[in-house]
Length: 423
Length: 164
Image 1 (cartoon, rainbow over the protein chains, first blue to last red):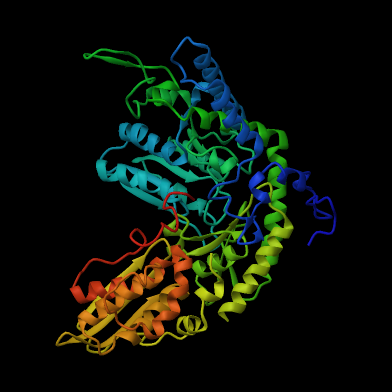
Image 2: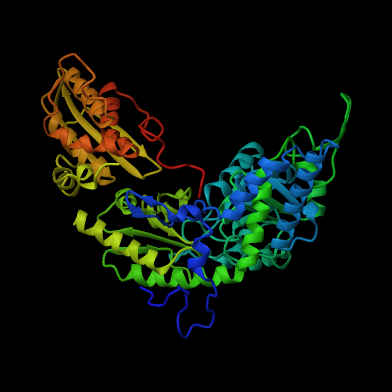
């Protein structure tokens, strides 16, 4: 329990002190004031989706109220204003991950669509019979299944870079795994099930050294880590707005323009063409070639506002806050007898998965819910990870910039209540 | 939302910790698998069926307190019943936990101890846990090969298969 007020998360003696005024930030999130089953909401399911701050909620409402129209279409005032705002959001996303050009930022529905887009365009173009695709053993289903579909279609092979018992990727195996038939390496930046921070820069170095392009699934990284796609050096990077305080149904696929230029379109429709006749259709320029149909205009604008919000707070401050809180949560929960932390990588962020002896995670989730505590239970769309650890499921607490030590204490008390109940 | 103690009644906690009729069933001539992958619950139900009577019923597997207790108490409730009686009991049990009990005018089997599951109706996402062993039993009696899952068929979908 912190004794200082107003609360500033800081551990004496640590070098990276969080400079967040968390209590003030919490007031930006209206939902955090509500109760659940008569208890104050403790929202620890942020890896699934984060809550939304007032500026994002207002930006969405403001567009619907004041300047809504379709983009890239008309000459009329509303269409022009909507187009400007939509393209401004693209520029914000570009700057946030330090892409070279805005045309390298493709708006998609989310990370899942970003990966599917690459698999179905770049992948279909480059992968043939007996070729190989490499992923790691800690991937979310969204970075497994699109490649399986492609492998099935092309009679190609999916190879798995293993993890060790701590949940770290065994990167030393990558050299051996890559062959002249390897066409792409696709890896998560941060594991949603374990919290492992994957050394993607090193993976890119190794893969590029062998001439193999790399896609990075950044869904769990971008909300809590400074990401620079050019420093990482990856060929593709994809992430979702809803996990970083923005709207659902929108995300970004970053791709190096040389690659995007060579790739065929993903879907056909309006906005992705420059001219259509029944004989021949020519594609629009980047990024519009990949944005068929009316996109999630309002979502993209909310996304832009979320990026502004995060930038103002400072992603490094968010990172420091979550790092300290994860450290506190790990110490607090590890001290509970019968609790097993799943995923003990040296570098971990945002996520704390655990099991309790003799209690199924689903029962843990139900009891905690009655205490107003929202966590995720189940396989977290990462069934191969569960299989690796020989467990059917875990309970998972995942952090955001608005979480506090008091909330971790409430979680620990809730877990002790679960244990008393099922003793 | 109901109280936790209504869901996790002492009898249910007892059966979840010390399940009855647990393990392979000698002489079983019917069996089926139940698996809810989102939860990770997995149960195999065994039946020794003779002349349309469930002479013996057992199960093995691992799951949450609700599915384990439900399987355990199901096996106790069904021994010696005919197939038709078993199906009628499941129908009444299902109505109880989905809050539809009392709607039927026809004479119905007595739920006996199974009535302790009435608290489930206040927790709709747990209906799939309580019914997994029963649906699996039904599949066993029907000689169905396919693994049974109740995640898409019972109650509101507890978890998205897509979100991380």
